[in-house]
Each structure stands twice: as structure tokens, then as C-alpha cells.
Length: 334
Image (cartoon, rainbow, N blue to C red; front, side, top):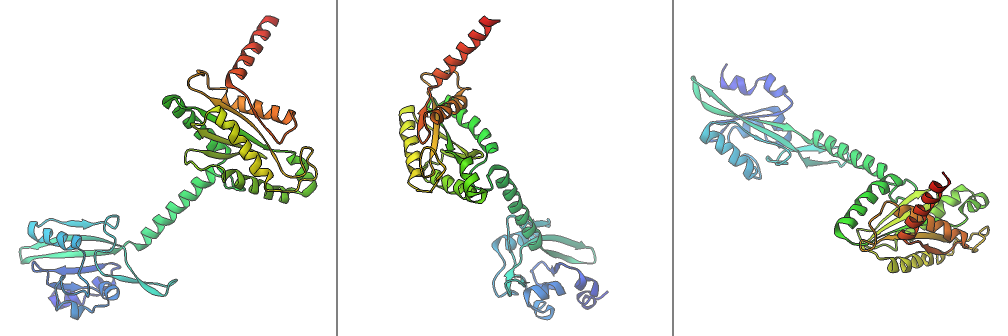
């Protein structure tokens, strides 16, 4: 088959990839229909040029070096789309944008050596744009699933599942680094009565507004706020001692009452308010830390007993001592 027949071969022109054949001087011998379509350069014009002059803008340095190395050392080369987005100035039509955009490319350079002719070099260009878009879509979908797995859909706060995992990490860091860790259990006062009187859609709006107000009070990246369940929220504040924790709890309570959200069925206030129970792990005083959440939860129960719309602190040692006393009393009865 003559060179002209090769250039005009319908098989090469029907292949859905770019095919370029060059000699040792990078003069172009073959330029198939795919290359014509995506470069805007006809085969006749291309075969009057070489790879350094055929395009209006030069190929990338990575491509030029890969082709040079293949010619010099007689070895194949590959440019992946992961590292080299568009080595050659080739374009495709983006229908949604009604304009041409650069094609993501994977390029392979193969040495074609024959006893009947001088060596020539086949450059295969594949459009990787579709696979790139698919990869981005899958990555986006994966990130969305990850967010759904850790985020409360109503308030956009972290959910209980994320809190459980984060709490273990935060507690471990507090123990290793020997810094205090404060836990706040927050409950919206008389929220059931609010839902019964105003309706659940209104209750959902209250949850969203309270969550936003609580979130606005934390500023450190290490602080964490989550929806614990129902109308309950939980905060983890590393490196916050007990005395600072009590002041911060009062700040949270004020932030919610300042919203002035009407609650005619509240027995403690005529606006939405919160009760808070908190406890603090102190590395100097405490060895036992497993009861920290229980201590904060017990403190929240006491805040409700004492009239709500207030914060109650329970020392971790106090709860531990009470549990130990309860165990001894139970043993004595046995």
C-alpha cells in the first residue's frame, strides 16, 4: 500500500482517536480525520508541517520532551490526563456552553520500526474529557454521601453519628495533651409544648434558628456543635476549663433569649429559651473520663428541675463519687 493510500485509509479516519505519524525529524506523515476535527487543521496542511509548527500554539513542553525522548532512545512514552491535562491544542464542542473547550487528553507515543523503512513514530491521542467528567461526578457524589452520613439534614449541623466519633478523638487528644475538655448538653425548653401549639413546621424553623444562633457563638476550628437528637444539641469545646465553661454557657443562653422567638406555652419564659448541663474533664484532677457525657446529661436534668432557662455545672468527680456510693449501697443490700 502506498503512502497516499495510507493517508486516505477509511479505517484510520473512522477510528475515534487522534492518529499522528511523524518521522525522526517530527515531519508529519499521517493526520487522521479525528485530528482534523479537533484541531481545525486539514490533513493536507498538516502534512506540510512538523509537530513544532503545525499548531497555532506550540504543544506543551512535556509532550515535546516525550516525543524527543522516543526519537532519541527508541522507547515508547505516555502522557496521562492525571498529570497533563491538554498537551496538544485540541478542542471539542461544549453544547451546554455553546463554545469550544480544550480536550483532556491521554497520549501514547509508539516507535514503529521496520526493516523496509526508516523508523517513524505513532502518536495516539485519546479524548479523556468524558472520563474526567465522570470522575468529578463520582467524587462529588461521594462527598455528598459523606456529608449526608455526618450532617443533620434539618439544621446542617453535625449529627449524632459524627459526634460519637469526634468525641472519642477529642477526649483522646485531651488526655494525651493534658488539656481540659468541656461538654455542653443543650435542650430547648418546653419544645414539645411548642410543637403542639404552633405545629411541627414551625418547630422545625425554631430548631434551625437555634442551631444557627448556637453555631454563631463558636469561633475555633476545634470547637464542635452537633444535633444530639430531637431538640437537644451538644457542644465539645477543647481546652476550656470549668470556670470558662460556665461563662460560655451563660453566653449561649443569652444568645437564644435575645432571638425573642415567641413561645406562649413556655412555663419559664414567653420566648424560646434553652437549658444547659455541662461538665469538664480536667487532666490534673481526673483519671476517670468515661462519665463525662453522663455528668453533662445529669447537669442538664438538674437545670430543668431548677426551672429551666439556665445552666447547671456538675463536676465529674461528683458524679463518679455518686455512682460509687450507689454501687456500694446496692452491694450492701445484697
